[in-house]
Length: 594
Image (tube, rainbow, N blue to C red):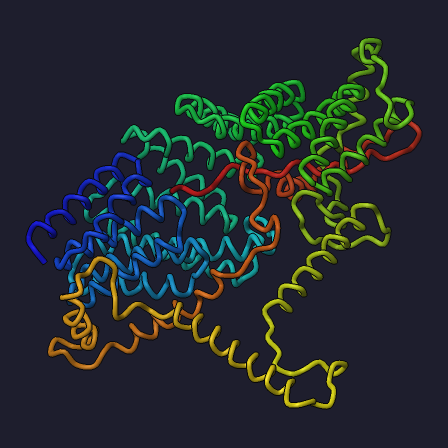
């Protein structure tokens, strides 16, 4: 290859890097791909392109392509015998595998990263590897814990063990960062240590680390990190029953979100403040914040968030005795739930509307008269006291199903509409999963009912053709999953023989001995998981987008910590009817620090 062609490849790659650093990753990817098309025989330039492409695709959320290029980078680094390059590529690959849920493979890559950095006494790289390992165990624990819908501090031992492992790696990272005086990295470690201790149920320790995170973020003027720290401090204080402190931190979250111009986070802060003031029984203030959340949700076309806001507003107005306003918001909640296909939300809204109609003495489905103006202040306060169970704080809450959270709690003996909906839902999943499994089966046997005496060998011929077709298809799919040992994109044909020769000894000792068995075992494991990336997901499996609703369950958690306070909060509606359970909207501000 001529020097000019190498220069062209490098120039395109440098332009791609410049665009990615300015935040224009999609444009940067186009230049990197063009650089590969141009080709080069400079392996180090090619390794840099692979690494940058992998990072760019990661940023764009295309994790399959990101993983592909980080694998190319790892292969090339081993070809060149570049151990630190191999460490870097292993770390990048580990992060990508973590994001797509391949935790075991991610651990293998991150440990290789750590091993090589320690071998070369690369303290900065060692710190990154320790941090990444903590992230993998942290993410795996959250993934398993989320599947079981457990609350912080109530996870099974298997999950707690993962969080404790994450703590070990984060603490090792912290010690190392203090030694090399990397203050910014200390802040990141504090944030994640706070998050893990929060999940372990040690809220006091979580607050300690988040306060340190806040201090370091303030030193650097990192307003985004300050905002996350305040949000996490609010969450931890909620679980300690320090609602006033939680409200102050959420207010700081709101101010910082406004300063950063992040409307979605601003809405989340309003949502959390509305819920916190509900816990403080300051319902008018709660209504103000929920109205602000509703307005932003409408601006951002977040129908799920809009529905949750109407749900919360209906409950707050019920607590204040404003039954007609509560009826109006419950009606809007029902309409939105129908629009978004939220069957559980529909069931809850219908129950609320039914009870409110009884309270107002109107036929169900008919708009109530404006009776609120005729209610005296003392009557309003009395009605407010009669609605104290609006946040589902009853001791028997665990015997019912949370329509939004989906917790599989103890079933009661009565077959309610909610339980019918749940059974329909699980029946749908069973049938859908069964069909998916059937779609993946390949049976060579002929159905019994169609078995007939063979005539002129036609059936035999058809069967042989079917077998040939399947064998060809399976062979093609297998080849698509093989690691590209013979060709790496961007390498000139003249260099291919050299690559093959180097690959034949890559991973061996300094004298070019046998390949590293552990390395090939690692690659085989990663290849073996690629088939999962080709599977389709159930409709809605990844959840409905709701940018104005915080990620984690909020009030289903509050219900449990408030369980012991209910006896002095019980109230009965006039006529002896109990106020219906109103499962509150889900949502808790994000606890991730990065």
